[in-house]
Structure formats: structure tokens, C-alpha cells
Length: 116
Image (cartoon, rainbow, N blue to C red; front, side, top):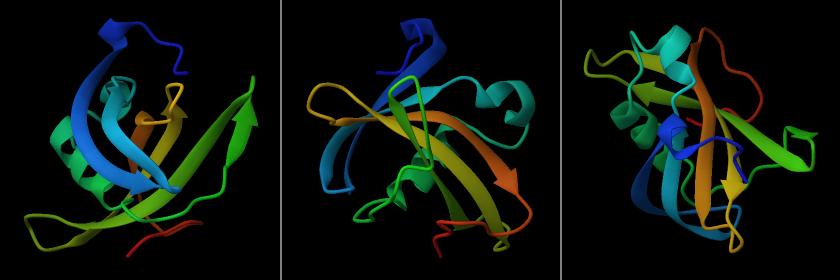
């Protein structure tokens, strides 16, 4: 469960499969806007999340009983340049059908879990 109030995230309906879980919604925390809002927005994050469809990931870390997942996603922007973004998420809900994006930001190099 993502420990934020409803005003701290926006929810979008999106059907994908991640770690064999049928995801029905994505909640994007507003945290990324503080430092990365000048180049990131919810639309781009949703495009990056769609890249996770059909993939399997190991938990990157665990804190207070919550498993955090992370992956680098290579995205080709409108300028046709490849850019690397890091997504950090958790699964939410009793049926694990909500994917909660905790943070997202741009990277210079590929790290673990990189997707092409």
C-alpha cells in the first residue's frame, strides 16, 4: 500500500501485466515533479510504464514490509534520441492490481533491469 493521501498521486486506468499480475490502474506519485517536472510528465511516465508489460522483475529493496521495484527503460523521444529513465514502483491493493509509481527520473547510463 502506498502511504500517500489521494492528493499526492494521480490514478490512470491502464491494463498491463507485470510480474504475472494483471494491472488495471497506475497511480503516479507527484514526488517526481519537485526535481524532474521540467522534463517529465504523467504522459511520458505512462509510456514508460507500458514498457514494463509482460516483464518480470525482482524486488530492488524492501522497507517497512513494502517491496520496491526499479527498472531502467530506454525511450525514444520525439527528437528520435534514446533517453534512459528510471522507474521505481510498488504493487498496491489486495489483488495487486494497482501499480504505484513512487518516483521516475532520467539517467545517463543503463543500470540493472535496463529494458531496450
